Image (cartoon, rainbow, N blue to C red; front, side, top):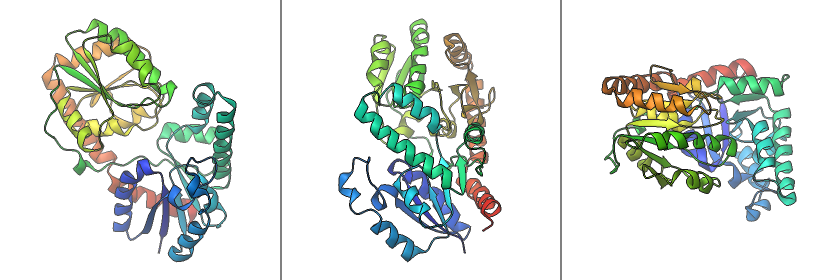
Length: 353
């Protein structure tokens, strides 16, 4: 019997639980834990965890006896897994190589931060080097991974989503017509694309633009955009309840990102039957159907944003049709049931389990 130990990050455990439920329906025994609760050392900020690591990890291996270990990030849990000789699967959610380079130029410029970043980089490289299978979250990232690690086994594993969690809620009191953006501001290369909206917001005073999200670059964005009366920042929203309310309330969902692999909000917005407009970068084109569930726009092109917003606001039928197409598309392609079946097939083929 297949037995998989999942060591996952706190921010993703909500979603991985749904994945695990579907795997158990396929007669795969699973044990899901927070990676930092079991294995954590320098440079993690949770110093109290450093001294209990390894003992907890050894205990769970001894008691559960997994024949596969799955991680969703490259941390100490992955390093400890490598010492067991149990096959290690890494679900790769972002272009870590580019993210490391961007971090060196932005948040990690200072010498002591460079030391921390270098340590995380070494952990990631060791994890990749000795892993048995890397599972990038989209085909775009799979191709990038193959360029970086041509000797490794690589197979795409998309982020799944449970459509039952995405239904219409009581609407927020927003001003219409409106466009809603639901995205963080943690990586500058992603976030700076929001500045493309400056001209759009200025030239469309009859449309209200709402941004829900937060992060270290929030103030840079707000300094540029909040001077317009038709722009409003809502801060971070409680997940998933307030996110559902927000997506229930907006007319169009927008995603202005300079680099992105698999933004879950794009799937969520389509399940809420909202037409979407998103930047044509990274894995985004794989998560929507251009001209069917929404529109792709070129990076840095404010004129395209303005045109596509006008197209949708001036055509209720098109908005409704794209919204319905979006829900159908996501349910068919990104259900956890489908992802779980494909995952089981992949690891049987790649690991010969």
